[in-house]
Image (cartoon, rainbow, N blue to C red; front, side):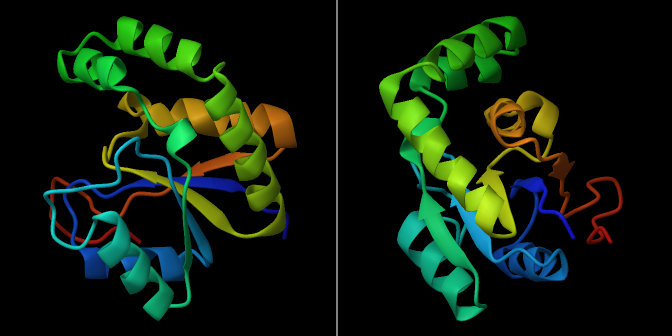
Length: 157
């Protein structure tokens, strides 16, 4: 089976449900694309998160260059999605982002990898733009995973 570029957000879920969903999707590498890999949500801060993933046989890589800069996060929180997109697309052209985009391309071509950030809705998250850039670079298709159906609280199949 040809690899795909998977993406996922952890908003509204638990660490256990999140990891089980990754395993169910046959993901063996999680690529964290948060600028700052800290979370108020239990289990999702970088070191503890990486350890939990490894205990389930999933590798962890943090590519900070693919994180949304502070001004982009502020625009998104304010609901200014056109500005958010403009800010992130400009950031994606930076040397750090291009370097990490190359690294991510190598990884998604060689493993069942998944890009991860906080937002459950990929359409309002920068990881969707990262996935689009990776799809252009690699020719792979994109699959957005959802851990939780927020209307019912059940774990999605």
